[in-house]
Image (cartoon, rainbow, N blue to C red; front, top):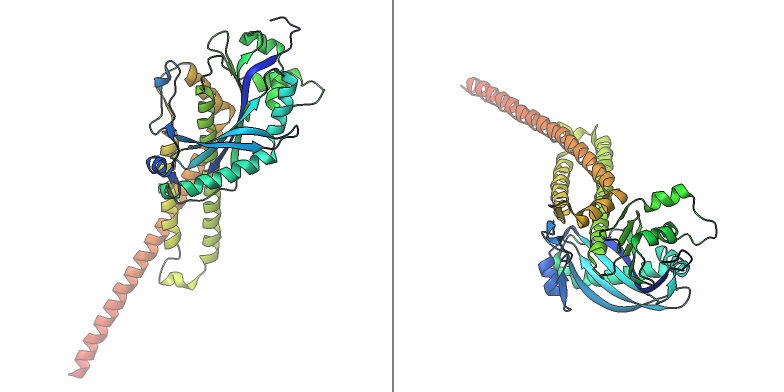
Length: 373
């Protein structure tokens, strides 16, 4: 490709993901029966894809076409829902890219989509419909007030069939991934930081992963890499959700301990019994959650798709969130041990008091019998 030739996208689309936490657990088989449309389980099609195992593959079904308001006029997008057994539901909006779109035009569209309120509203409306449809398949339904967003610019055909090296040399992918629509170029260091997580299997394909967006050039049209990025994004959402839940529970423990520390009722019964049971329930739920998330994808081989997925995990900082959840889980386990110890001590005190009372009563009745005779 000539150095001066513009980068024109002949066949491309933008995948906008909005992932919500809607339940503690989703029974995917029941959800499949509840959905009247055709459903499909995620299956990786790429060669060696069998080395990435999905023990309980997420379930997807089409939501039809919807209008999406953009600055240059409304566009029709294809909407898809994907359900994960660990309680996440992803809304995927497929925004078409007009053939012949230049990189500058694509940057403007991507910039708008990254922060589009219309897209947020449409995704929220669609996920509410999904919740109603699969209501019988979920445990402890809810809708967390936060969500995870991710955007994949997916190109199948670029004019001139450039190689991965050509695209990296000629296209300012950092501006595309950041949605930087201004005239001032990014610094070299910033551009390198945004595009450092990049992969190519052949000379003619390219994946560049940033924390909130990715560029995928895949002439084969395989959707495996966007699917892996979606799985990683759903995992990130779940760790963020449980991190907040743990913060709330730890704060509640502190408040209740402070409020009940000097209560007179603890002479007869520990004030922490209910709190101890709630803490144990939270720990059990958390263990089940971590197992479901960890089992959502298992790597059993060191090959290209595994490298892309591990790169996404690093770029999205999933390990940091997982570490935060693990540390708070350990803190909660230690707190549970202290609470249970307090409950056990108060129980033993109560038992001792009952024994003393019985002894006093026995002495009293003995004296009563003596004086009665």
